[in-house]
Image 1 (cartoon, rainbow, N blue to C red):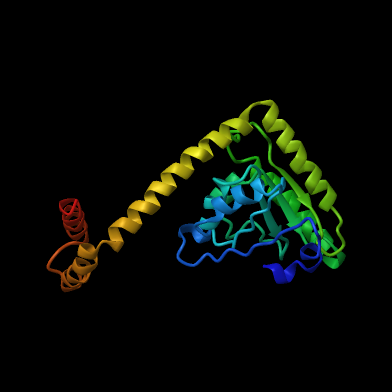
Image 2 (cartoon, one colour):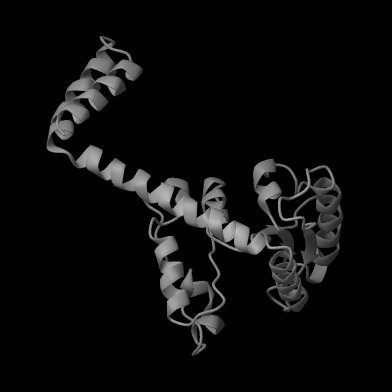
Length: 226
């Protein structure tokens, strides 16, 4: 959200582009990958992708980035409740924000809780041990440490060749997602399918056909048009 980044948006070497997530699986705009490539081609060597924080979006973004940082806020001692295990397992690091004023002690408690929880997770594919930092966007305390950790992670994965390996995996995933998207478009935009969809919807709601059989029939109809 550019409106929350007044200082950053005023920087000559920074570019902020909001990406609406409507209609995109996982809450991430469909063209996010292409935007990343475009920004890299334009000379931006550091690119941040902020998710909407709905769970599935994190999974999608993880397949696009080199470093995955989970941002958390300390609360009333229940920081680990409601956080999906899968998201924490994906994180290369966790930053507990708002570690300032009266909330600083709570943030440090949350940091210890999260560190203890991470010990229960299996080793990461990269070999990196996820770290937990506290920081404050208000006072800027801890921000430099978070960035130093990010750079240290990148040096680590480049030295053990995981960086190149992950980029190869991401390239393969891009191809799979592209094919999925194009097949989805071709299927639902086909005039015959558009016509038959309503008919099968009525049959399913009337209970005269199972959803699985309806799906199989529609695929057969589509195959017959080719």
